[in-house]
Image (cartoon, rainbow, N blue to C red; front, side, top):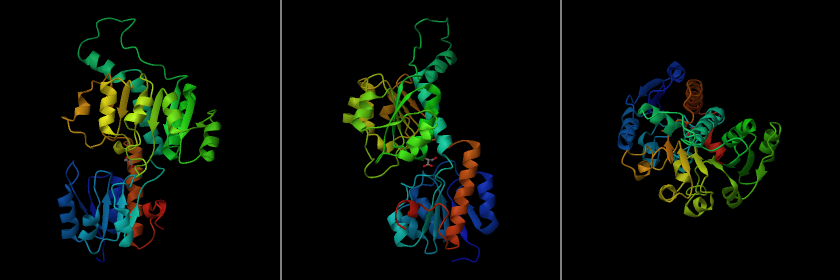
Length: 336
Ligand code: DGY
């Protein structure tokens, strides 16, 4: 343990977060635009003998990383999701783990709608055509999309982000269906105050009825591969799938087949499995007519990323003082 704690930050972060860390710690930063390869991460944590690790969704924080420094006692991820961290290992070793729930819900819901609208009205294709010099005349039958207003929206997972996403449907007079571990009456009441009568149903029923499907579940054992071939075949062949949750919630091969065989009309993905999606990946052979992909930018607004950085720093510093982080992943995952 060092008098001034040593903290390793796995990427450049917004300034406000850095300033917060520098008030109390010696800070070391991985200065590359890409994530440190796992072996390098283990090496840096060990060589610096860090007390704290400030990480994000692109870092795999497994047992080897956690064991690399005998002084490590606090980890904080700049994300709400903590599926990239071995919580069992952290809990066993009494290492605090912080995360950032709430702060990014509205921003991530915004991006979900950007993808939904772009897919419905073929915005990416349309822009591409203009850039390619193919805008030759107004055409009564070109680039026809689907109406969003009055359509049926299905939200799988009505938690914080799912509810923020569903709330935005009020402006489009949509019917809203949802699945959740059980009926979420608090979220239903919130949505009702916006004029939305959200209907709880089974995943099968939801898939059969939706025009637009939004995935909003965390990655857990029970949600991995939740949407596979059987589920995709239940959907209408004009339906659009939007995933801003985690890539692994959808079986990538099944999605590939769904787009190939027109089981659904479009997939709009902010998250993929694997991530990043290599340019040679078979999914990317599908044209923008069928597939839109953004590089995991759900929470990427200037305001939100700055707040996330400060919140992560605050969590990390609490752990370094041997206090429970204000937003503890171990507590939220039921370890404490
Ligand atoms: C999260 O916070 O878990 C997001 O996926 C990263 O923005």
